[in-house]
Length: 282
Length: 294
Figure 1 (cartoon, chains in turn blue, red):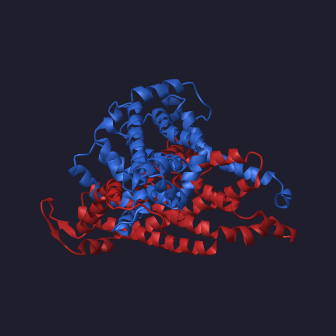
Figure 2 (cartoon, rainbow over the protein chains, first blue to last red):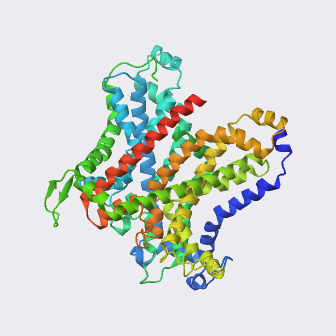
């Protein structure tokens, strides 16, 4: 290791620790704020030492919500976010596994056209077609429904593309062996292709779950009923516009609760998370 | 690229493709088409009738100083976010590639902001810089800075840039680190034997080899700053003060949903689509070159 041996180790460590501080400081201040009552937060400068109200603040957020969220509890919002994220992640995987299989393992008329029709969705995020999409979802009566929250975000090709890449690497011998054994395309899909795709499915699920959970503009549009609010929109609604005092200790507790599931996913499934992130961008 | 051995038939694959095609047509092609149609329609003041107006909506947009200003705001915002997310991402990746002890820990923590929604990142930063309660705002005033991003457009821009870039550092860090670890150690060792200093090795070997990763990341970061930062703007500044932070995607939403100008908003959507397609085309050109390179 001639390259590293001559370098002093403290410079990289110092820079990385500075990096950790930049990353963690905003989160740390939110944690501190969620452990105090409002009076302590409003006192300038706010203390940076944790207080003793953590249980009370989190309980209040989880069970009661605030006046600005019409009393909808954060627990309910987290449930909505969870449903949305699971439907988006599960839905994308469920429709793209078969479609990628069809495009890779068959020859049929218009195959290239189908592939390109799906592929082109990669280019245009939902943000650029937001109002016509809203009108369609509204015409279908899906406003304030989980289907309306999730389905438009399922229409994207990231998963299809990843599975296509992977399916192309499955050896021909496996397909031939299946044919000799008399297995049809459905059997081969269920018994061979899906089990082989397990790690890809896991990696993709992690990325898509985070993507779904963190959505903002779309849920903001399609939910009007307070009980259908996602946690990220709910947190926003708790912040006052000057007329009323914002209950910052509850806002910060809610922000931390909103961060918790995706952060837990990144921490617990880091290997799959990294694989998913790198693979989907190829 | 195609497989050599395939299954016969067309009905089964058609059934397999159906769900995805249906979702894509209903929630993608139909709305995208609608956006193009609406961008060429105008309504009367009561929203009762629509008529074909051709390119009028586009002409109106490009004659509107607010829209042109929003373009300039977006250009400044997205390039600043890209630079401020890429440079630290690269720096931390180079350092994390050098350390042995604690490397896994640094990596884990530096990846965390990726999991945080842009809207939440916005609120966390707003809480630090809020003129009446923010900790950093207090320090700034103590240091003699007249800090109030609610009134000062430049400060508002700075704050949304910081919040948006902070979240994206993780992503760039991860890709730069992967790029660094793909560089053969033998190259660096040979250069070290030739007497090149670490700094020289970085600029003459590492940095050029990272160029493909960097180009790819520039495009990804621009797209991120264009579209995914709506939550940051909406939470921190609401496009203000006096439209100083009104980026294009915020304006599409505001004009369409709050202002109810469907034709103008659709025309803005179409322009945004053209921008993304342009960016994607750049990315593809570059990916082709990367294949060449490798």
